[in-house]
Length: 138
Image 1 (cartoon, rainbow, N blue to C red):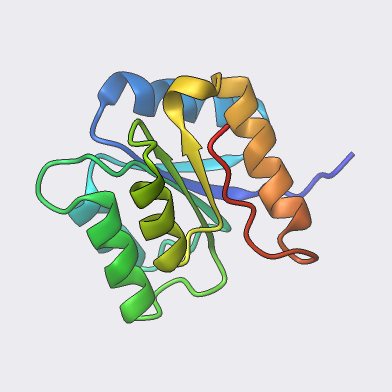
Image 2: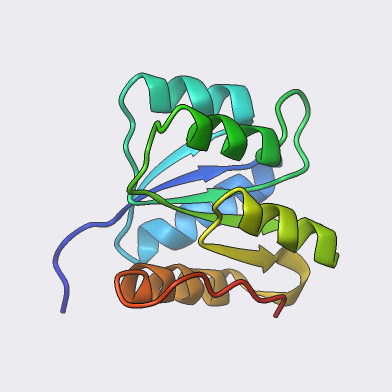
């Protein structure tokens, strides 16, 4: 069994979902950090938080997830981190936008249970070294 704790940053403005995913990933052995929006996440990253994977909501007040992802990529802030969009936006244009901004995957919240999200994150961490993007809608 892998004893290495994988670091994850979960970004969502919904407190309930943020807490639920934080607890779930904690239970699965992840070292969890959270941010309640794009600005808070950007500040944490600039202060030195360097997660292995980022779970990023899109619809948030102020700086949305696409803006945050664009800023992270433009400034090369966490270049080795796998960024997975976790959103209720599931139209093709949203998936395409996430892919064009460099997301490793795109998960539509309505189609995945928290356990399935953990499984998906583990897949991205495990296969990211061997394969390219695996953007799917569910």
